[in-house]
Length: 232
Image (cartoon, rainbow, N blue to C red; front, side, top):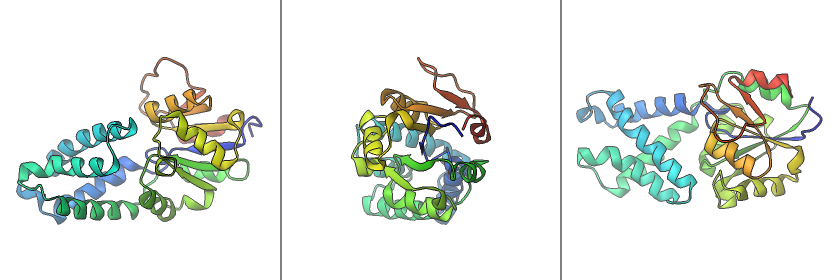
């Protein structure tokens, strides 16, 4: 046990919950259930149109440039408009269906449960996420992660998104955790690592793709969750 740390904060999406795999499966179901193959030749064509635009909108959401509704509407409108669909009520219904599908997906990043089982007796464990409240809670419960997590802190609770320093300050205050005794783990350099660094919280960058770091060296860097046991 690393006696320096007492509170461990984890990003949820693509750090513990396998967002890439789960969301891809959900989008495939949407593609077939709504017969989008009448317009897109393959699911890959649909996915490769949707995903880059979706990621761009999430980046704008993190920066506070757009609100939640704009994110939801615009990410689907982008792939539906070429099909002649721009009805907002239909888009919101489709979004609800898609999000409901995601809550039932349970694929986790390899080693997630094993890591949390190891850490649970030694540390206080929290989720710190930009995801939507009603969705993240169900994902946590249905995937089996919930028993390990003391509390989930969401950007919707703080009204601030990662990487803004304010959400990290909010998390510390609402978990009664000390800055010097806390550690943030996440896969996103921009949202998780820069955010924690700016909030003067130590970081673990989960970097399975071995991407280059930015203009500072994170406290720790791992390519697999199992490596975290080496220093905690």
